[in-house]
Length: 268
Ligand code: DGL
Image 1 (tube, rainbow, N blue to C red):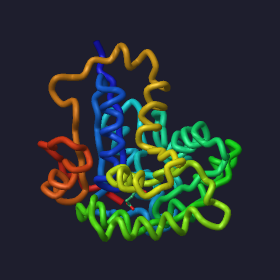
Image 2 (image 1 turned 180 degrees about the vertical axis):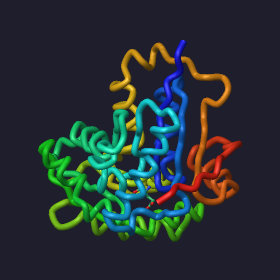
Image 3 (image 1 turned 90 degrees about the vertical axis):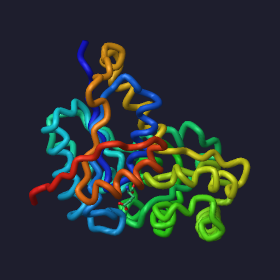
Image 4 (image 1 turned 45 degrees about the vertical axis):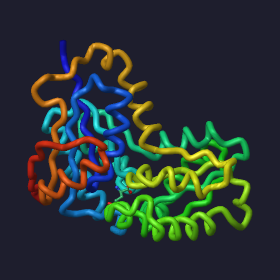
């Protein structure tokens, strides 16, 4: 029986929330996870830089034998999905379209708030995807969330205060009635309960990570049923910076221990 190998790419540790969702929905597959930890964050970089980095990472996973590539990073998806898809010979799935589709399905008011990094928000990728599905969107960059989550300040008074301010600004000026909050960044699933608590009760919180895992499963269809997890290395991790830090921080995002990580130097 063949094993199905899915490549997952992110700027760092955050994409492990997408891997976690994939493991829940497609446990039969093998996974190759690449975190570009030496070059994160992507969220404050230009489209040119993010595209260059993302294409290198995608090619690496393609060469390692991935049969499908999931671009777990919202910023890389928003800024470079087409170019990534053109640079590899395997199907590529990003996180923006699945998140937008789930949001559109959940919104009765046809109004959604999307939060993400500075780069994701200024690309307007979510705004366009939602507009195409008949949903009006308010986009709000929340650059403080990534460092707060990486600091481990999940249920923390400072994070709560910051979230109150961001959400207050986003759900205002005509968007008080928005009934969906899209988590458009890999790190935000870790503060989902906090955001759930702070948002109005009528708001549905949509997690791009979960939505993407379901889209990948639908795309793979029969291949998933035929796949058998390989016993030797069902989960392989590659990082461009310290493997020790990846193990330590990564375990929080993946919600399980990470034993072995391979260090990779990508040639520019
Ligand atoms: N992975 C990024 C995203 O989902 C967040 C971290 C970064 O800025 O690199 O947008």
